[in-house]
Amino acid sequence: MKNETNKITYFLYARKSSESEDRQVQSIEDQISRLKDLANNLNISIKEILTEAKTAKKPYCRPVFTNMLERIEKGEAQGILCWQINRLSRNPIDSGTLSWMLQQGALKCIQSIDRQYLPDDNVLLFNVESGMANQFIIDLRKNSKRGMEGKADRGWLPSRAPLGYLNDKLEHTIIEDKERFHLVRKMWNIMLTGNYTPPQIREIANKEWGFRTPKTKRDGGVEIASSVIYKLFTNIFYTGMFMWAGRVYKGNHKSMITLEEYDRVQIILGRNGKPRAQTHNFAYTGLMRCKICNSMYTASEKTKIIKSTGKLKTYVYYNCTRKKKEVKCDQKNPMTLKELEDQIDIELERYTIMPKFQEWALEILNRNNDKEIEERTKIYENQHRTLVNTQKELDTLTKMRYRELIDDETFIKERDELTTKIVKLKTNLRETESRAEKWLELTEKTFNFSCYARKEFLLGDLNKKREIFSALGQNFLVKDKKIHITPNEWFVPIEKAYPELEKKYKRLELDKNLTVEARNMAFAQLILEWGDYRDLNPN
Image (cartoon, rainbow, N blue to C red):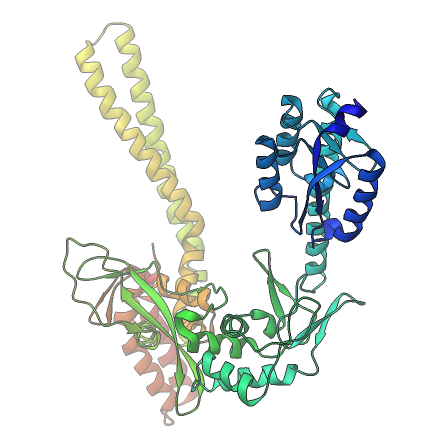
């Protein structure tokens, strides 16, 4: 077989990738030199020397290799001389192609520096060695990914540092580029004025400042490109954070700008900018509907630069979604957050009571608690007794039917009536149980709400504001930027009774001519009047 392989013509193929997979592999020149010596020793005829600086971990990305196989298929050569099998392939598709060409005889020999692969050889050996080369790439990819994720978790960008920073190769960190850091910061300052575009800033940096990118082995030492200047102004790295694999990490590198400055530049850039992802929480979405078309109201946030101060100001607007196309809606003007909350505050004021009245209300409720429980217990017992008797009637009716004392028509009619009555009695019984347990708690909440809701609304967070607003009533309808609310029924008596009682209370407080005894009697009378409105509780 050795003599036969000496008679065929070979392509000498040498490859070295620039990636980490080939760090330990000899250079192309060294491969060619050693393979020529091997060819002389084995008396091998070399048709042509082919070289390529491409990775072999993916198929269809090496034009020289692909062309070589095509030429072998045409008969220009019958063998390949290479350093090792992994120079030919590190992926299963190219490995399969080579294996198939060997089996079919189109490729009569693959000669590496240390062994020979022939058509009559056991295909298992070739496949194992090819698989090992492929597995090397898979393991390398996994280890590289794991290493980069670990580096990101530690707060370091696992990639090339952007302009203004440098990769510290010894410490594997990112440090300031002393020569360029302050210049890049100066670019951000110019951009923040809103008076310059990125191309204008690029022109200033390149022509006036003589800015050049850092010099590396392969590139650098050139002017800032147009694509680079836009990447610079949309890179969140400069805020002290960084984006990696779809996640935002807190970096350990020195920040150049603040998040507020970054957001402002994104607004200035408009469509060209890439603002960081934000989640907006609006307190009142999902509660209000348009009075014209009955579509839901939604909210949006807009940020503007105040020219007089140069500062950013954010506005929240509520507007009709106008999703119901069958109804023509003319509500085009949005309602500002301030306009909405001013109206909510006015609505809350209508139901707000002084702390003294809340105190009196709770005292009255506590005094009447035993009486209320006694009354509801009697109601419960009566309902339960009626339910038991009705169930007995149904049982008796069933027995009469078994004994054929009544016909089917009569039985079905009376059975259905009794069954309906039982269902209703059970429902009433459950409601009484629930109301007996919760009526005092609900009533206390009503008065607490009336006393403190307005203050909590002014000082509360978004969730608290939403909770208070939704407690005001139902059917929140908006027309011409005015909100119309159907109030909860337990607020109506407060609105009607309280204002006059508050006036009386304030007059008594200011009346200096009253004796202590007269004042106490007057307050007692006021408490009685307030107590007469016991229907204030929500039951």
